[in-house]
Image (cartoon, rainbow, N blue to C red; front, side, top):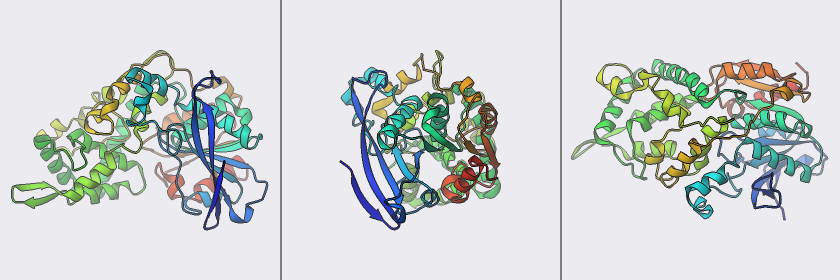
Length: 432
């Protein structure tokens, strides 16, 4: 049963789909996938083509828009849009510290989560597409959603009319180690750019780090704030306003108290809001699995590779006069100790990190013979997805047209719309 309702200029309809947990066992256990249909009010009864939106992540539900926000308004000019909560996210059957114990112990939880990668997500899409429309549709993939769209082109191109990708062309054959070996230099560049913009933050960050190294406080919400956790606020630096948000977060970190300087409640609340993964635990559990292919485990790649970049060692920075470097999109073991929402999932994460036998995600021969109109926005020096990897993949997909720009950061689709989506559509349609 579906329910429809209205927002300004938009008619929304909620859909719930029953899909196999394991698509290779269609008679086995089933889970639910939620999707929200959006259509412009003036097109409510029109026979429009469909566009399915795949959110970034992994582990993030689709945007919750109010009316025609961001890129949605542009999409609704041409399409009936399906905002998909990928399995385990949003209003789909959840996978969290509260629900995963229903599966059993850590081994059973990890086995369950092996079905939550791009290959399963695309097979969900195909089942849903056949139920909704039966004809090929357009996919719009942001970040990890672009990884899913690339797999879609590999595995089920017959289901696609057009593929649009923003900030999400993955390496086709690189291991997670290759991804993070390329990522740490970008993190260093983003840190340097932040300090060039806000030179006063060099001393502020060092003071905060020194305080954390001595006290290692537990924040008001239960998050254990280590120096490494503080460094991971660099995740903000890959977005348009992230450097400014980081600056405002740390500028008033301390307050005077009867017992001396202490971290302010406002700082603690702001940091916990940025660092806690309570509302998207799959981001931590599945983050490195999205690069898993073949027999080689991911084995906490981001943490292992960090050792190859000693400039990120906070002890060395504090012992000298070097700026403290921030890190970016990387999931490491310590997060499962620091974040109270992740602590119960620590052993499950260890099993996933050691998992071997991942199915291949990309068919290079099929991509080389691609016939689906496709376009990708590649953000120059994207903090989260390596530009060189993206360009190499773009050259490997027949007919894919690219727009390489340094006008936007990774969140270009959200902050640059309707221009970003308009450009992608024009490229895919051969209008430019």
